[in-house]
Image (cartoon, rainbow, N blue to C red; front, side, top):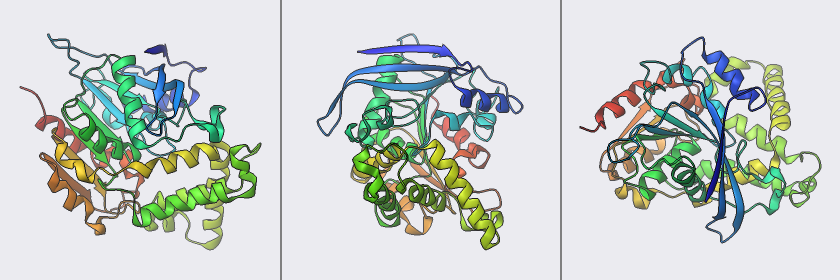
Length: 364
């Protein structure tokens, strides 16, 4: 059972989302975002733990439309990355390129659902009070929370498209396997359909060990953010861009130190160590490779060549996409416009592929 609440975005509801929306207004006009919360009762985690109430915060744009059989035909699920939230998709570089009239995800045509994922944003997370006593969750738990939000909270019984960036991209692969008949198309961005290993596991372990290993973490019961959060922030900064852009931003030792210090200072004020720890560790159960053949919907995966987290030289995407019945993979060449892993939110780089996917998966 769920208890959904909805509200038109106001200053009290979300300063961040309003600021982003105001900025986007100069680039594109689209229906005002509506924020809401859905309470999922008795949420069972795969670990066996149970939360009596799991809050899922979300933003929607547009209106659901049903066919004669009552099936929603225009819903689009958009999923954010690790430590992110729905707010990132209301930036001009994303919403301004996609949500306006006649744009690829025209919000007067589509019903856009953008959740804060389990453990993130304004959804239930460790920093709400349980801290390290919050149930350990994995990606499959997160997908289940998304599914229950849609079906129980918003009464969406079908998706036109599932798309996501980074962690959200990995969730997109899982959606195609766990609920293969639920969507018409899938678009994972900045992700690989294989378990976390190699350098991808190493940078995550550095973050996990830095937080858990620092004395002032105090088993998650710290009063001020522990020193390990600084190391975590530095690692997130390292893998989030590409070397060329970093050199352009900080061409001297002094500028590099200043840029990193500024980033870390902001991160320590806005992030919580337990939330980061849980979010990074959640990838432990991600391993879509063996089940890729279950994906039925057309899938178009998009990565960028300068992504340090998903480097194309591994050859994983090209190899694994062959297992997807209607799968296609695109790697955007590195250029002055790409920004490493963060290229996933810069829609101008890949929206032409989104258009192609939508056109190719239209129902008769």
